[in-house]
Image (cartoon, rainbow over all chains, first blue to last red; front, side):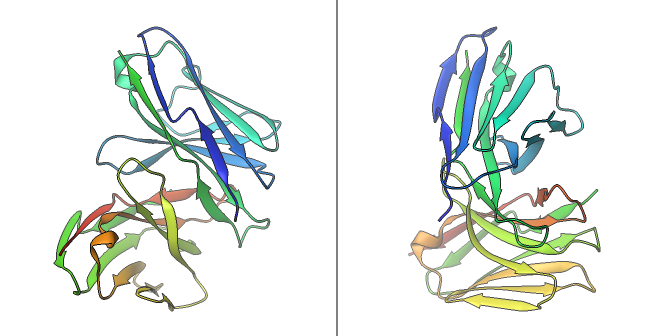
Length: 118
Length: 113
């Protein structure tokens, strides 16, 4: 089946540094990928929709200058957390829809990246 | 936009019993309702989904029902096993071309052996 690969799975960084998370669709092309954030024991909150070849669409309350998204190819989207602070520590999960057409897409998730900012 | 509410937030059952998780949604145009299972620290995995043109779908011990009039859908797990213990999320896709899903708050299911 369709696989979404996400790296790194865990990252620890110092406050003020930037961290890049990669999300790849391994055996299919994903024109659209989604980035979610999940706090402990909470639900998945959509941060932004990543569109290949165009600017990402951010959800209300998500700072686009802090969470930079690049979707340069049909198989790769990256999320960069810039100038990370402890409150950015979270579980970030990317996902992509498999299958074309409005009515048939199934969402497949990457394994997630646990970010800890010291 | 779409709003999805999920109940209960925690559910504890004895092994072999059934478990039911319920969700409601707000956008009457929503047409796709998946359920995900997430084990601790892992990615959500799709376990079953239903589209708005059917009222019920079953896959072995798991079933989902959809009531479009009332705008709610439910996950039913029969003959629960300890390995069913996880967090379950319902989701709904509203009338948007971006295929965005809105998730419920999750239900932590604990199956006691």
